[in-house]
Image 1 (cartoon, rainbow, N blue to C red):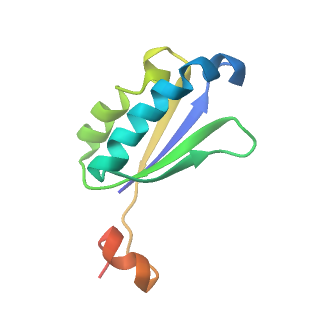
Image 2 (image 1 turned 30 degrees about the vertical axis):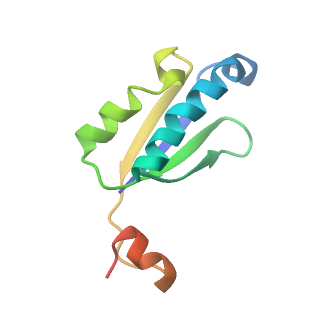
Length: 97
């Protein structure tokens, strides 16, 4: 599992023109099951993604497809996580016994 933190490298108004394209990218990976959760940071300095089911190399490759990154508008910070506990209703979703 990976926590991806996106940080804007430019003012948010420069991000907005690519938001729809970014959402198409994000939605593709939600449909595939790789992305579990995503959203915006508060204050609006970037966003986050919780991903699972891929290797570090695969998540890096996926993130290279992000329109924001391709345009040089964001940086991604990737942290690998090893969940060992979860609420019972989430345990099966994230693969915790």
